[in-house]
Image (cartoon, rainbow, N blue to C red; front, side, top):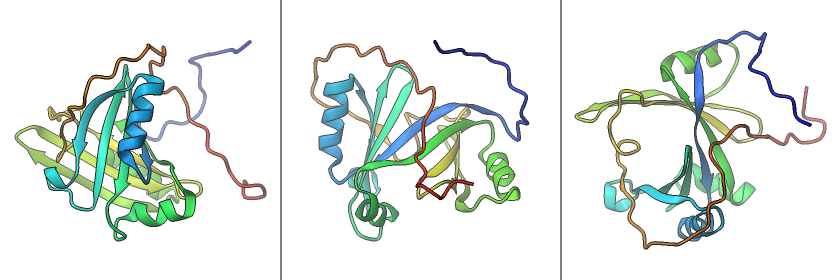
Length: 190
């Protein structure tokens, strides 16, 4: 039997509200989108790619209740995900968190020894402010910090509504991401 509690005695360095999304890198985003839709009931939400001004990748955002998967395929070898795919194959590249301030989260981690991947950047336009930063974690997975509480756009700048043919699926009762597990190689854990 599992025992759950809200009690925690650690130190919070910055507030994390929830998982924002998981980003999968894959060699065939369209096929992966079909799989997650048909097997797990995810629905199309947003898209970016060459049609929206993003020239080096395509990303499909899928939604199922309160969980979001971003399925990304690099379109050329200069995209950072291309080398990652060569080494690892299809898999989760980014575990992203919803935070109050991506700058605060990033600086808090860097000050305690984390290595940065993407320094804090923000877009401020007619849809509001969207902030993002990223750090390295174990292996070659990254954690992104997303600050989109004051952003009224669909997903993130550069994304548009994703319209795909209707796919009738059964509900899977998946509601939200409650945890993730990272596998660390034997002998590599402190």
